[in-house]
Amino acid sequence: MKIINPATEETIQEITEYSSESIKQIFLKLKKGQLSWKQIPISERLNRIRIFSDLLGTNKDELAKILTSEMGKPLWQSLNEINGAQYRINFFLENSEKYLSDEWQILEGNTKEKISYEPLGIIANISAWNYPYLVGVNVFIPALIAGNSVLYKPSEYATLTGLKIEELLLKAGIPDNCFKAIAGGKNAGEALLDLPLDGYFFTGSFKTGKYIAEKVAPKLVPCQLELGGNDPLYVADDVESIKNVANSAVEGVFYNNGQSCCAVKRIYVHQKVYDEFICCFLEELKKWKVGNPMEDGVMIGPVARKEHLIFLEDLVSDALKKGAVLLCGGQRSPSSGKGWGFSPTVFSNVDHTMRLMKEETFGPVIGIQKVINDDEAAALMQDTEFGLTVSVYSKDKFRAEKILAGMNTGTAYWNCCDRVSPFLPWSGRKNSGIGATLSHLGIRAFAKPKGWHLRS
Image (cartoon, rainbow, N blue to C red):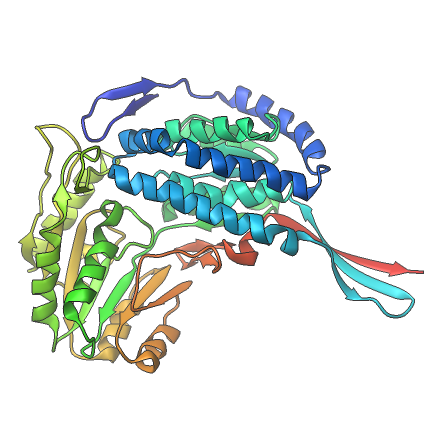
């Protein structure tokens, strides 16, 4: 398996994929290791995770360079991601013991009642390439803290990062029979689905997530899916600063080159402020330097997957054929003749007959549609098969909350967008997934409750 730099198209390294038989043997090893790991006091498990977090900080310059080289995000964004991962780990360190401890419900009388939380066992963490640290720690950190063993399959587009995660976890004291990174592509993923695991936690596309859910359904074990989004943003006519809102929207669209499940995928603007918003949006976007992600000042690098360039070109072609107005971009933008770059692309005069308003773009392409009022905006925002996030910008909190309350999404934003907090559940609805990571729900997702009836 070749690891290719999307900015230069050079082969960084070649990795031998794990075979189905080798993955089976690793599973048997982890099955035995989990029995010992769950007996270790949670205070000690937390201590080892704390060491892992410290190691991320100590090695973050090296780790960021590896991530940027194999996935393509600007180096400063890779550093931000590692810092963010440490912040999330700290949440788990401070809250896991509380939510995994026994809870006494009845202490009076002859029969006492309590709830305990036991580890699931051995889980598969089939992770994503766009934020391998952030989406990874959402799963394998609380899973390990709860006493599980983890078969961790990083995306083939973030393999080197996944192997470094394993290296640092083992260095922090996580036993090698409790955590293992599986290098490989589709075949390795299939091998995990064939094993008698105790839970499956996947981050990725709707198509793959649906396939996984159907494949493991007969096992009757937990299956959580963190899938894609078609996240809308609405700008009401009462915003106090169109410039500030436009700047926020540009970041929501183009950070990580738009390769975020909760990136802004479509924008609706009240007709009274539409023209001003367009001008401010384009003016801010001009400041976003495109180029080699290792260079200082670069805001947008290449897309991570070469085949995605064709998908983006098809979206552009479809929009143009149906009457959209191309304001900037619309084509590949290789650096020095190489690389999988795509120019930041903005369309106006868009509508819901166009694919870019209905599909998950997952790249630097955005359509901005004019609406006459809140009701039209709300109807258009709901016109999707996804249900991850929704954003409303308005100075009126009541007005914004009224719109947001009607949205069938797992996350609602008022005057912000494209953000995740460890204190709140991260969950999708409809084609955006099932289950939740983060918050106390994302801690208990890796444990199974047991009810105790204790009669003296």
